[in-house]
Image (tube, rainbow, N blue to C red):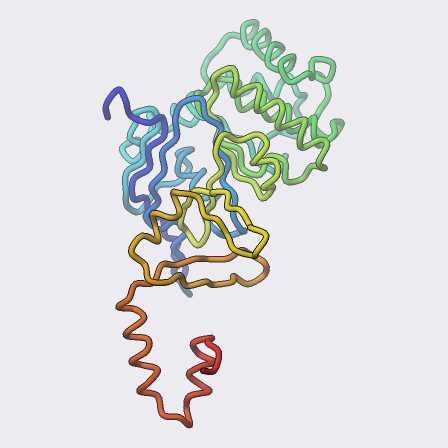
Length: 305
């Protein structure tokens, strides 16, 4: 890896989960780069592979194929103590479920000091650092309260402090506002944005497109295990759509565009079609006997000529 390499660099990453009944490809040859200090949001439907990507970058799981680097560190090569140190010191996690973030029987202060204790930091130093972190998320007055005594937003702010306890360069947030109302969600996002300004790199998974557009530097879509840039298009008064230049490049050389409306209001998928596709389609249609023509039209989703 060169000095100019991206902070996060995923190359053709594949992850498949197998059960006795079936095999599911959660990530299909993902290519993803992220610069130091960015906040990137990944949106997409449930089961699209978003949490899988975070688990791989956090060292909680390993890809089946591809290369995975964080700050020049080859995650696929990490084993044993080196992998434990990466999880403990170089990456922080925030989950939607508070039980994954915090210990219910410990105070906010003790939750924040725990990761520091695991690194061997002395009592007085870790207490001082924990108080600073709780102050940075505006919770000094709540430091002796346990999670059940806090609101959902306060719990997530404590979780942010816990995730940053050992000064990681990368913060991974999996639906950090998913269980919060809009007002509280924005408060939590303001805290994350402030941490980004302090130099933390943040990768966030969310279902909330509005929050992603407000706070993230970039928004990516993950659907069916494939990652793509979420680019803005414009609907003209005549009903036509103006595509961004990046999307137009994909359709260069295509004779037409295939449009697929996804089920459940999950968006519209555009695919380029070349002349050869059209000729083959016309040839096959002409070979179909008239008595089977209606069946052909239903299968192809085309109108009668």
